[in-house]
Picture 1 (cartoon, rainbow, N blue to C red):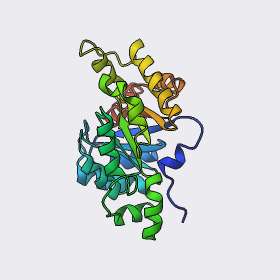
Picture 2 (tube, rainbow, N blue to C red; picture 1 turned 90 degrees about the horizontal axis):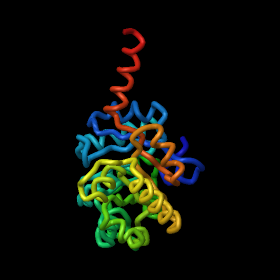
Picture 3 (tube, helix red, strand yellow; picture 1 turned 135 degrees about the horizontal axis):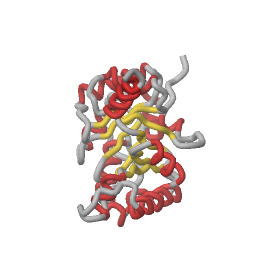
Picture 4 (cartoon, one colour; picture 1 turned 180 degrees about the vertical axis):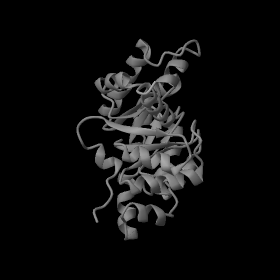
Length: 256
């Protein structure tokens, strides 16, 4: 049986990747999104309703569908980042990385020495990701489990180069909604506004110049097309609740 494909593998291909955004804490939802054709699935613990138990089960369900899994942890919960990797996640998104120290602390939880200080406990991750040899997993994990720092505030933008140059940080993720709110000091919600778009383009360019990848949330298919033009490599396309609503509305529109 071939080894499962990783997010690191997918990022080597041309064209943007599309991840399902899953906040509903039922593994069947995550699995169905994986089987619907998304390149990978993100389980959201920050604003979604996922907890450790649902993340553990959701990872297994997505792996059953032979897709990579990303977990977004709560703000500052770097211990959960390590636990997500131990549960088999391919990558972790950490929100509100506002300084080089934040980036360092996040990477420390994500990478084994000499890059970081991740504690050893990978049996479940090895099982789900096709590893049978402990030393092989140790040798490959730092390259195949990715640390993604969210850059979504003026403080983070000001030190984006420092965040991107932090050993162990593999990419950045932009939330257009948070960017628009923080850039305007809370005066407007404009995730597709000119300043937000220019900031995303600038950050994507910085990421690529640093040899890292750039990711973002996309509010709609049209927005996703714009983000692809900005150089975004990985984007979350809508949310699970939106998929259900859209499917129901589409069906009902054909019978009413």
